[in-house]
Image 1 (cartoon, rainbow, N blue to C red):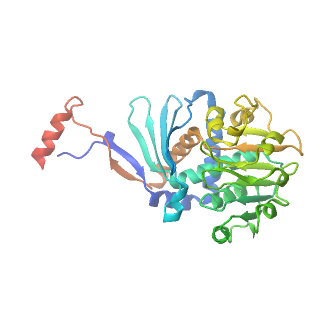
Image 2 (cartoon, rainbow, N blue to C red):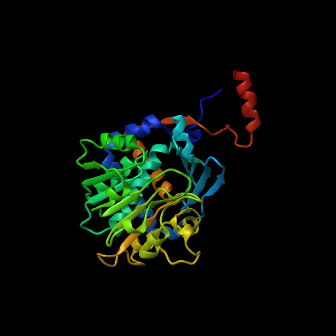
Image 3 (tube, rainbow, N blue to C red):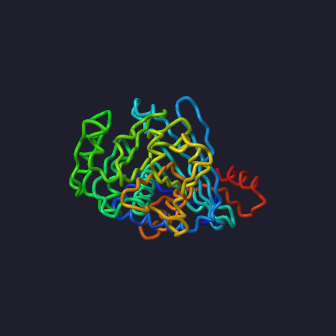
Length: 350
């Protein structure tokens, strides 16, 4: 059987190569450059196909597909969310993704996206905060110190200059893990005994908990004037982190309202409640923060265009880094109409 043709080969970025790519680039540079790709795509928001993610819910979690296209390239991500996995030593979120050429339908990239999703989530959070938080913000509280926490911290340092971090998790070992991982990264880190203690003096509050339930991680009395809230944990129906009264006091910014109304904090509000889309702030079509005392809330659930941006960024780095494997993914017979003959030739060569 002849060797597969160039057209049949798809670059594949494994977990090992993704880690090498991030480390060779530098985590802060990677996050900064990724945020720039996300902003570029948000600025051309209207060019993209948009749909809420396709979700299959079960008692234990959710499995989702997140597709989009800008008319030139098509991207999708497979991702799950299973909070109970942590009890058996598994990741609560895993993912992989693909980028394809719209003109031919041929894949251009297949990659792990468990690590990449954590990076793009953090980059999007910090990008939103750069638009919405007070310019003098330097202290951030992170409530929920699981797999996403360190990425959030490093992204906010890289994009906003955050240098003081206050951590709280109901499992103190998670906070200790987070603090240990961030040692030597230029952050003054304090582990707090309660959520209330963590938010005291914080300019930015990030909530990034995992449990799939209506929860009140932040109560109304914990949020003072001028704070920016980065609500990352809500990502499915029936899962929230903020008391409803906080939403009523805040200027709310979202990625894609039809999806956020299903999965985000605003599932607690009427379907016609006024929110602002993040792309509108980026393009100047809508204001962001309007005063130093305003409470701003980024109700983030993650959206397919962010994954598309991440896929574009990784693909653009492959030629210079060589950190990929060639995957023989596509059947490519010498005669396109003779797929059956390709099987027969393989049998003869076998």
